[in-house]
Amino acid sequence: MQVKVLLFASLKEQVGERSVSVYLPDAATVHDLLHALREQFPSLATRLNMARVAVNEEYVSPATLLHPGDEVALIPPVSGGAHV
Image (cartoon, rainbow, N blue to C red; front, side, top):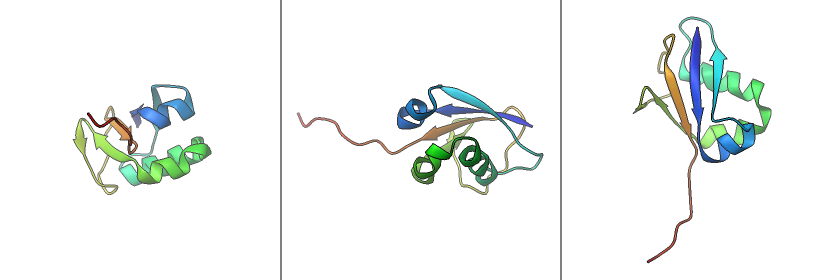
């Protein structure tokens, strides 16, 4: 199956793309997706460990099953800002 992965902040900068398509076996989980991304983009390994994952705009756990056509968003922690 194919899922679309949206990359934000440092993940987007590291890959150089806003999104990537990932092919996974049927009955794959978010955990499987993260493993596949670590293999495809080894430089993301540490960042992926800290990223929040949303599937179809809802935060999910690594055990969540994925379905063909799902849209997965990977959101790394963000810091900074200014005190007003």
